[in-house]
Amino acid sequence: MSRYRGPRLRVMRALGVELPGLSRKSIERKPYPPGQHGSGRRKKTSDYGRQLSEKQKLKMNYGLSEKPLRRLVTEAFKSRGVFSDKLLELLERRLDNVVFRAGIAPTIPAARQLVNHGHILVNGKRVDIPSFRVKVGQEIVVKEKSRKLPVIEATVQSPSLALPAWLQVEPAKFSATVTALPDAESVPFPVNVADIVEFYSRRISK
Image (cartoon, rainbow, N blue to C red; front, side, top):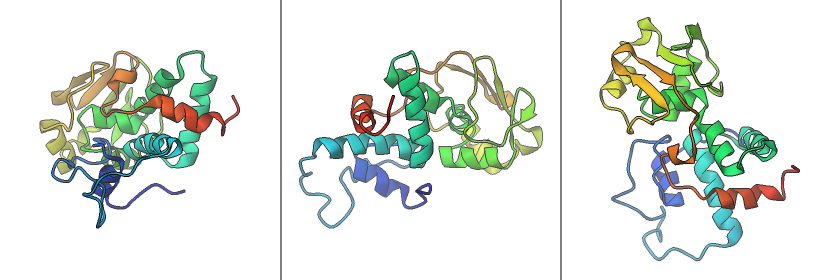
């Protein structure tokens, strides 16, 4: 399945949660599902429906199709740490997410475009792979020639989210350094990873 490119606010309304990585817009004015009967009472959700919804939160916020998300889930299952913590850590360490969380891009899709177009350096070297996994101690910097891009200038002046504790950000230098590994508390929206465990436990052999 390809990456979703449709109306982002519609997705957040369907899931009943704001996903800052997907859009800067808010569902506050219409906190109910889209459609003719969306403002009515929400239907009772099955266990499978609830698990699917939690998985969709991760897919939509981080902009992943099923295959790369499944790879990360498999890696988290096989790790020695707690599955929930490891999965969220792996998602937060993606370069496109780090560019977003550092206040360089307004959303993860915008950050992915910046990375793809070669505007981002990691430890002084251009990295154009959005899924690149950052490590503690690495510095992420916007190329000097790219710092005047309107999307970057506007976001640095007004970041979408509060800057996370695991990044040391220097807006004046258009840079951020990874000072620690992100944990589950770093994720900027509510997600029940236990439901995701249930969803994948029968689909992935550990």
